[in-house]
Image (cartoon, rainbow, N blue to C red; front, side, top):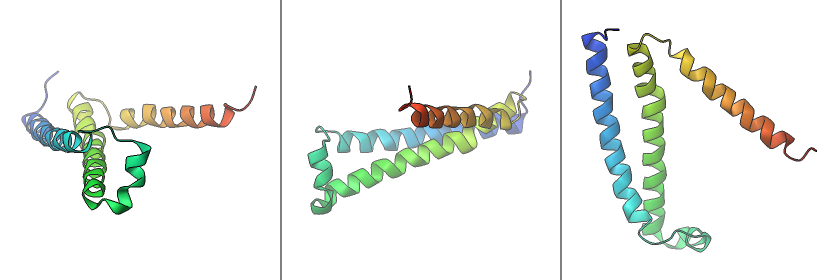
Length: 109
């Protein structure tokens, strides 16, 4: 199978973006989890603006990385391989249904 030059360049670009996002997340991870993050630390978020900012940065960067991979990189990769982007959505939807059914039915015997 041959990937078009435009698709190849798009994948390279997205790989660079994801790589940079991973680096930013790792930096924030190192700052946030330098010490163990516990329930007590979470309870102090309202009183510790620096810790709250690090938590916010971590959550934001994690979400951005997840969105970039799921919304851009994986669909571009599938398209480059000649597969429809919808083929990614189906397993994710099945996983959500499975988790919902497990959670709903976990109390039943």
